[in-house]
Image 1 (cartoon, each protein chain N blue to C red):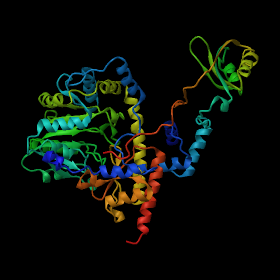
Image 2 (image 1 turned 90 degrees about the vertical axis):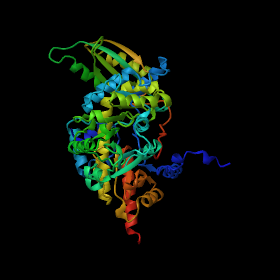
Image 3 (image 1 turned 135 degrees about the vertical axis):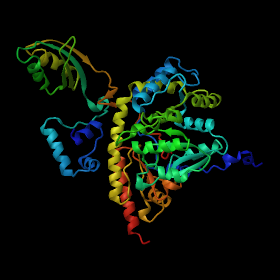
Image 4 (image 1 turned 180 degrees about the horizontal axis):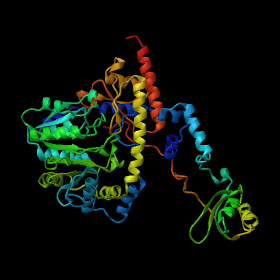
Length: 160
Length: 392
């Protein structure tokens, strides 16, 4: 596996200069590998994981279960890709079970999300039904726990 | 009244740990980067912690059998069989202890008669010599050297051996050097042990953290199981230091003797830790591999940096310690470590804390984040450069 990708998978947020030190490669090589990962669409981008108050974030999030009609030749793909293109859609997954797509949506208010569902999502030809669940509280985001203080280690500084 | 006159002579005579006074200095320094720890920086994986919580919820709050939970002994039997190629009967050849330290203490107390000699290689973990002394034995150090990557050689063993030697204490891979022995070297040690009729106490607490080659347990060699007590625990590989859970495997009569001491002193290891240890053995392999892969990369980085900086450092094949030589700076290990701490706020442990054989070396634990390792190595580099620039 690409060594830079291995470091990324470990979850540490190292800048290219730090990666270069750890992997004993020149900075230029790290940048080349990062560019290659981007070109291969393995590395799509960077996003901070934030823990904002409701006021700060000003965002309402919802999970929408969507049932759609599969199409000959493309299955669920064409509709799923079309739905994914909306700015409101944060993530979109094809699911097994009682519905087809799970769509994570963000909006500035409950009304905006509701309007997106009723005016955009439900009206697409091939969308059979939607069920919207608003998120009330986040406990863990992208591997980070939101509650509690910043973890302070109580590890002894010197031990045998 | 001078209450100290009540202290037993052999305890009063024990030297203070060479780490203790160093700890006091580091504890007072804020924002120091410590490479002085002897434990993983990872918290215990959650599924193992959760098993401990679940044990409490189930009301698992009572004593266990002196030997430990049979479910844990069965899991250990399978784990040791699968990973070390040696089979132990869960019923009478495995004893669960309060960390591998208790297992070592029990072995010493159960096996050493006053005046018996115990060979151990040095530099080594700080407890070995005192454990032998506290059992009224006499510890006989066997030096290991940087030129051999701190592997224990039969030549050194033969030179140190003397009539009266009864036990040989091994720690492979070794804290603080990270040195270990390959199969041929372990076979040679085994042959020597048979020749001199030595019983082996083999502390293999770092064995999962072997980065090159395959770890060979001396107990797995032909004829050696009957003269080896295999000591192991969960602290390092499963990041469970605070749970204090370890074990000893060996011939039934020896385990029975150790169990006698254990039942009158400790009675049993914490049941909560035993339940968590079962979870670690059954489902902890993936988490352990992730941690080991990170240690491996960190080791490669820090060893390379020490050598770039001019502190010659052998490649430790196991453990999470690097053992660079600091004598090239013109300073002794203690002077260097104290100077580094004061000037750059980086803590390493002077090698002599692990015995006289550590003179000229410092121990650096690389079980810390990449960011900290990069910053620590940069600070060490500045310190070494400032020493080189200073008039002698």
